[in-house]
Length: 259
Ligand code: SF4
Ligand code: SF4
Image 1 (spheres, protein in one colour):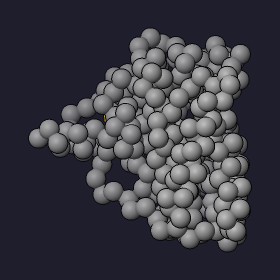
Image 2 (cartoon, rainbow, N blue to C red; image 1 turned 180 degrees about the vertical axis):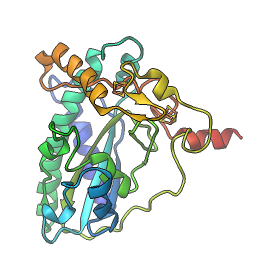
Image 3 (cartoon, protein in one colour; image 1 turned 135 degrees about the vertical axis):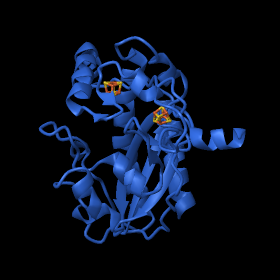
Image 4 (tube, rainbow, N blue to C red; image 1 turned 90 degrees about the vertical axis):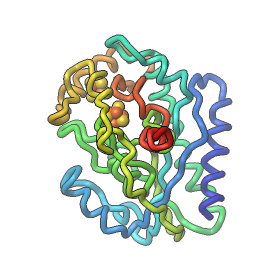
């Protein structure tokens, strides 16, 4: 079933790319699975927000969280290197990928139901709570639990294909073997290798070596959202994701290969 789900996701993304008017492009998605009863989900109430949802809030007999990473093709992050404002290409990719995730989740649900099982959508509005700038369903933390990647110093999830892309998830009552979480770090800094490139790239002094100032980051994203409001909801920045060693790959593996 793992392979079936992976191919449902991969095929849909490929097809979506050729939809008329879509300007973004994605690499082959990464997919990972978490046990819906993994005790680590309880920790999200401490780590993210006391109001963080649990998988079974969405499906009482849910057994597996399917989570995936949609990596942007290189030209998208490359367009966002340098300068203060986010590139239009980056903002378009954000808007189009959000729409892709919403459609893809509906498609996964439909395909699972056709196979005689159940799935439920996780409301996308939960991914962000404007009052405290935190999420009641943190896609990145859920993906971490599922073994899709590890957190970088830039607070992003670094996957085997880097951090430039977006994460989505859905719950099913299918029992699928969980993906094993990697013991090793994927961020050079966290692996004890000299790197703070993401901090150096932050253009609003939000990302610092002594912590992350969420409000300063949001201020920058709002500025771009205003600039690109003709595209739809596009509060983006992403300068701390582009032109860095973990943009497109897990740089720790690469540095080990070099040794
Ligand atoms: S730029 Fe370096 S320190 Fe920052 S997240 Fe990537 S690997 Fe880690
Ligand atoms: S998104 Fe922009 S403002 Fe926020 S931490 Fe990254 S570079 Fe800084």
